[in-house]
Length: 272
Length: 332
Ligand SMILES: Nc1ncnc2c1ncn2[C@@H]1O[C@H](COP(=O)(O)OP(=O)(O)OP(=O)(O)O)[C@@H](O)[C@H]1O
Ligand SMILES: [Mg+2]
Image (cartoon, each protein chain N blue to C red):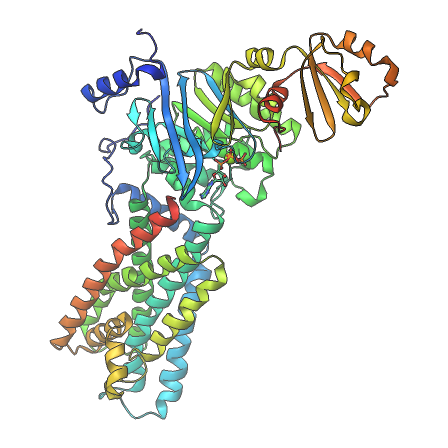
């Protein structure tokens, strides 16, 4: 009568920590997301991808003909890696906030997973893995497009794909925290209006923030998208400067620090 | 076979358990032991220290009105909510510390349907099986077998919102059976179903019981409890008010017969013959006279010229037990 755990370790002991687990159960949660996504991937890709792509065409090649080159590259080449970073941010944030809200509050998806032998830590692990996958997918697809448009200037650009792991974590975690806190779906829009949209506008995608007043500059330095944009642009344009390492470390630290916060809020919501 | 372990010697259970840490407790027939089990939400006490034990292979019922604490108790058993006080052992594992071991061995039909709306019926089952570590092929085979068992084989490709309420409930039961659970926990499995659908579910649950599964059931339908349960407890306000076998409980608490009669017809106690009525309850304008002989009692009321609808003479049932114990009706 026992469940066959083919090739799997004995039932796990339950460490009651605050860090996500990336175990095989987390991969099952990831698998559930994949199966659901494969049914709608065309729409999903089109929606998440269409907007930044049109931004690139309209601004880069439309407005760009009126804008003198920025930092010695064409306007289109300047904004392309930034828009790449923003596709990852937008795709991950929208998906995690809205699907997370539905799974938490409407459909009881996490509830049903928890009646099986899966803990909150593995659910969080699975959702993070899934958003990392999305982030890599969106980043890589956009990378292919800007390659075809001739806007890539260095083979280092290939490193953009693995870099997308970081925005996957960094934008998924707060979006899901917001989803645990929201009572109605509309409240999610506060997060987008107050956090995501300003980041999109002011993280150095369209213009260098170095020319802004010091206060604004310092503020922007603390937002994650700014660092993702810098790294993406550095790799795509092949301009590696020492301060890019600072950006990388900053993102790593933020990613790691966010995870226990997310587990805390998920446990608070799911295990009353 | 050792004698079964009652809740009195749970200390022994614990000691033996410490010796055989991690092993299932095969020496006893009790698959669930609860002692002074408590659940608090903030300041509110939802379960106020209850004791019960469930034997392997039986169907054990929890009856009680809304808010009695049935779901809270179920959730503690299947590890969906923390235990606020007392002891709870499930299959020999301490529910406070070893929930992961328990979770793989129980099947759960929660009160609220929580099917994954983005997945088809079959996918709902297969991916659920995957959480238990089944390989894809095994999960697929089991999923199809469970769909057959619950008569849903035609619906494998449908999405949950395309199912009727009864089909959804059956699908949830199919999902709960996927891991061949040693204990099946059913929180109001037939609420909202029409009588035919309810009978289908009862039939399936009876088959499972025949096959030796342990069932734990909460319900608002006394017919369901009477049909399925070997033993049951009646809860209200987080406490157990009575326990026993359904027929024994009815006999003991309510006696054999009851005459329901509109209270307005009985203005004045003098009308109620004392010797015949062993107990009297009034709920919502209806007076219940529990007695040993409805015929004789009715004869005494001849003067009232009772018309149909004003009274009902019938054998007692679990609903009456409930009424007597709580002064409330079961479906309230
Ligand atoms: N998550 C929760 N937070 C706060 N209070 C809760 C929560 N869940 C249940 N309660 C309270 O605990 C008490 C018992 O609820 P429970 O769901 O266990 O009752 P029940 O017997 O299952 O009722 P019903 O027949 O309506 O399903 C109720 O007073 C309820 O308001
Ligand atoms: Mg309930």
